[in-house]
Length: 183
Image (cartoon, rainbow, N blue to C red; front, top):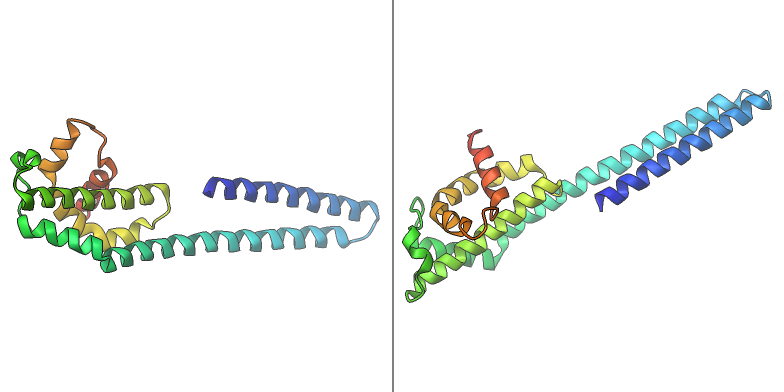
């Protein structure tokens, strides 16, 4: 969507520039002094439209970021998944590698599925940051500690899944490690 808006913006810029040049050239040929004023008014209106467009994109990006933060705080599903995970693996405890293939213990199985849900949610957020849909600074302020503790907890979980797909959770890992350097 952003690429379409950028292309439309540049088309608008080129057409406005052509119109301004035509009006400027027409004003000079008719021996009036309105040409420079028309050119100046076209360029000023174009700059105001451009500034408004960029401000709107900035506000929308921050609003998307705040919405995703609120969703994580208010989501019953997310809260239930975190509770399911921390019931079996409390804060500061890593998920053992051996637990990845346990199917007969219902609590461990649910905790592993909860971990998958949480990491997929964080991967969604980091992809949004990478795509420019979410504000990285705002997300870092809120999620930095959560990402670091989750990366520690899920280290064996991620290793287990990297055997099948080495790119799984790659953006989550990238941002968690990047943000942990700035703590």
